[in-house]
Length: 436
Image (cartoon, rainbow, N blue to C red; front, side, top):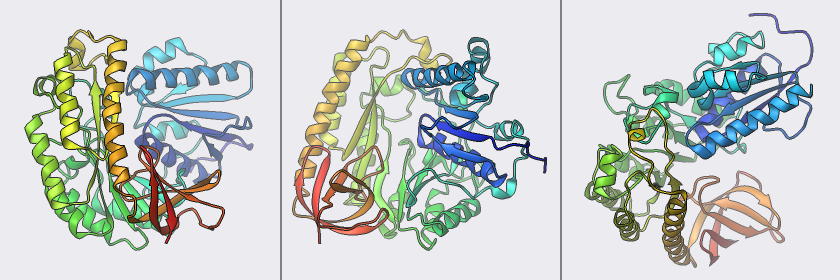
C-alpha cells in the first residue's frame, strides 16, 4: 500500500446522470474512505480541496449539464478555491481529447473503467478486497445493484457502447455477496440495473442467467424488495415473469424501454423488434403477473419520424395503458449509425410531440390512480417532506415514479418503514393515504 499524502484533504464527489453512474461514484467513495480520505457526495459546502466530477454523456442535455459543471469548478480552481479538479465518467470517456484541449484547468480526465488510475492521484492503490462493499449515497433503506457493465446491442441512436464498452456480467456469487453486505447495513430494497438487464450471464455462463440470479438474491435475509430496471424487449427471457410470480420479494414491476411502436421507426432504430412483438410481450407479462406495473420510455423525434409515425406511437400507448411512462427527445449523436440520417425533426416539433404524448400518459396515470382509491397497499417510507411522510408502493421506483403521501401530524414514521396504507385520494401522479 502506498503512503497517503500528508494533510487532511477533503474530496467532494459530484455525480451527474443515471443510477449506474451513482454506483460508480459509490465505489470511488468506498475506496477513498477505506484509505481514511475525508469524502462527501454532491456537497454544497465549499470545504473540499479536491473535486471529482462523474459526468454523463448520454444525450445533449446531459452533456451540456456535465460541461457546465466542469466549467463551474474550473473557475473555482482558477480562483484558488479548490486545489485539484478531476473529471471521470461517460463524457470524459468519449470526449477526453476535446475536453483536455478546451478545459485545461482540469488536472486529469479519466474514462469509465479507470478507477485505479484515478485513485493513483490520491496515492492510493485500488483494493480488490473492497469489491462487493459499498458506501451508498442513497437513503439507507435502498440501493442500486449494478449486475453488469456495457452493452452489446446496436441501437442506432445510442452511444452507450461507445462509452461503456461491451457487455460484461458480474458473477452471481459476487452479486449475492454485495447484496448481503448491503442488507447487513440496513438496505431493504435493491434495484437491479445494467445497460441491458436481460443479457445478463450470456458472456460468462453462455446462457441468460437473470432468473437464477433473482432466485439467489431472494435468499438474502433482510432484503424485502427486488426491483428490475432497464430490460431490453427483444428476445426477452419470459421465464423472468415466472420467477416474479413465485418470488414475493421481487416487485411486480418492470422497467422495459420500448422507444417506439412504429415498425418503420423501430427498424431504423435497430431495435430488433416489431410493434406486434412488443404487444405480445406486454400481454404475456400481464398474463403471468396480473398486478405488474410496467414502466417504459419512448424516444420522440427520431430522424424521419412522420406525424403518422408519431400518431401510431400514441395509439400504441393508448392501447397498452402503461402504468409508468417517460419521454426522451432524440439527440443526434456522432459515431452512432443514426448520425448518418439527417436530424430533420425540429426542436419545436420534438417538444410538441413529447408534450402530446405525456398528456396521453397523464390521463392514463390519473385513471389508474383513481382506481386505487379504497385499496390497501404496502408502502415503503422514503422521507418526510413538509407536512407529509412520502413513500412508494412496489409499483414505484425512487425519483421517477409515483409517490404516496401520508399526513404527518397524527403519525410517527421512520425512513425505511414498511406500512399499510388505505388510499383515500388520488391525483395524476400521487396518491394520498391513511395508515391502517
